[in-house]
Structures are given as C-alpha cells and as structure tokens.
Length: 280
Image 1 (cartoon, rainbow, N blue to C red):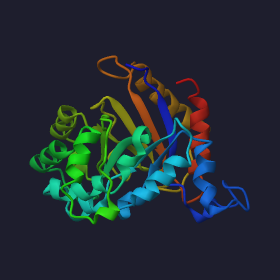
Image 2: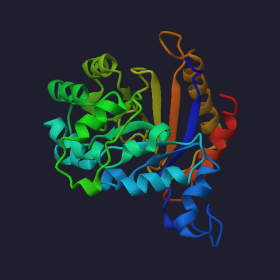
Image 3: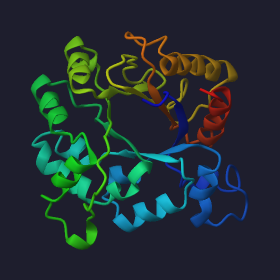
Image 4: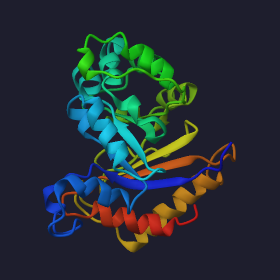
C-alpha cells in the first residue's frame, strides 16, 4: 500500500470575482483550470451537482491538468435533493454514465451532499450506501442501465479501480451513533464540514480516507481562515495522514476543499494550507 497523503484544493474554479484577483488580469477563461491546477493538487468539481456533465468535458478537464492531479466529483442533486436518496439505483445510473469514468486515474472521491432538511433515516441511508458502486467496473455496469442517449454517455471502462464515497450531512439528526456505524460498515467517509456552526461538524474516521470541506469558520462561504486556524487544520490533517488521530493507527489519505469563495478567499487559503502540509 502506498503511503497516505494529503491533497488540498478548491470547490469549483469558475468564479467571476476571482478574475483579476486570483486569476491574472487578461487570463482567458478557458485557461483558468490549468492555472488553478498548477497551484493546487485537487479540485472538487461541483458543476456535476447541478447538471449531468458530458464525457467530452471530463476528457478536456483531464487533459488540462497535471498528471498527478485528482478531481473529486460532487454527486448530482437529483440523487440527493430531488430523489432524497430513495430508489438509489434508478437515480445513480445516469450519473455514472455521464462521463466521469473517463477521468481514469484522475478520478478521486465522490461527494454526496445532503440537503439541510433531510433527516436521518437508517433504512434509507443503509440502502443508499449499499447501492453505491465500489469500483469503476461496477459503476460502468450501473451506468449501462441508464436511459441517457448514447451520445451523452461513456462506460467503456477497461481498468478496474476502487471508488471512494463521502457524505456531507446537514441535519442535526445525523449526529447519531447509528449513522456513524452505518458509514463505518459501508466504508463511506463522513465529511468533516466546517460551516461557521451552521451544520454538524463530525470528525469520525469511518473509511480509508478523510474528506474535509472548509466553508468558512466565522462567516459561511465567505470568511477567510487566519494563520492560526490554518495551523490548527494542518495539525489535524497531519494526524489523520500519519495515523496518530485514527483509532487503528493507520494513516488515511485526506482530501481538503475550501468552499469560502464569496470573498475570493478559497484559493489563497488552499495554497496556504498546502504549504503548511508540504511533505505530508
């Protein structure tokens, strides 16, 4: 097994306020992903939450990023917010057919963010976790049951790779040992979500990796992180990577994404945290 490592990035990269701030003045919009990926080692792709993307888009994003780059993919709101995890196979098949499997080695964890008004239901969550494909071959097989037009799909996987899943909860009823137990049984990571106190902050180790979303510690989606706050997160992350903060002592890969984009803080905080974790 390769050594655990930390990856730090941003949630999305196409934001108008970042232009002439994080992105240099005059940088073509088509070059923004390339610019961001040269300064970070992962990005959480969130357009997939709002609509199914196309295989051609995933291919282009893979081509525009460095060899060791990884995308985490946010699961579609059709699955989480409209179907609310119910009848998961029917909701998941088009998502996995839509082209994300073209990323190959650059495909990182899948993020499933639940709506704030969805309460914990043990049977529903258990069924959803059980339905999630755990390898790219399984995901391709599920995708082939989709009714999407073939021109919008890609399921021609030839190399089987493991898939990782993370779930971000926003209703206080999920602060429950039963939920934590289900996540641990199914090997799904519970997102460590810093939301300025708005939603639950859980730090349980339930999978072979950790997934952090830093939305702002004082003002949701807006406030930047102080040097002291970044130092504290760096210590936490180092403890998960080296295993000191894991119950079994085994280090975990850690994926960290800043989502405090409203005041153009996310990319700068991500780069600052990444510098603190050099060598981790």
